[in-house]
Length: 232
Image (cartoon, rainbow, N blue to C red):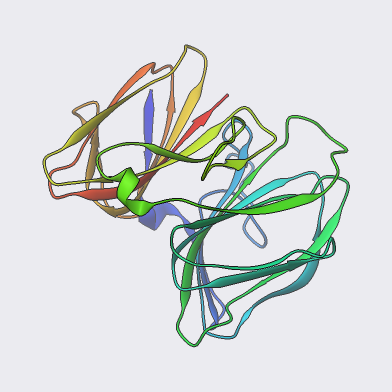
């Protein structure tokens, strides 16, 4: 089953320095029927003005992934980590038993990012952080893993049985994704257009929550940048 969630169906928040779009309940937005999809419970599409951001604040028992689409994002936390990430970079933080961190835009220009939260597969983990980098050329016309429980070069490790893929489909190209029965797929179109299994049509910032589907065909007429998450 493929359920489409158009971009305009998301909850939008305008704080001046921060423009946010929430795909799931978050902050001031709460919908009891839209709290999670498997272990995926937050998917925020954020744009942060230059030299602004989220000051020091706590988290616990959550896996938090930040994917920078343009600009720069600076992370600092109570375990002593500090890093600046740009396009081609991914931040993964395991809040575990508790961590305090900040995320700010250190540059003059805006930063655009996706912030994605997952419930961990184990509680009471020690807090940890890492920055990974991938080669954007390697995601052209293929699904490139960037975060996974099976980590490797350019792939951040996460404490959940899931994988985040990025891809850039050229016009007229297609991909096939397969997974075992009983798993879920989340698809988000960053740019462009996308058709799923020759029928469901998605445009920029549209999303799909997919169940009971072991083979997923992804086609793009004009070209697309997309994110796909394989979930339990």
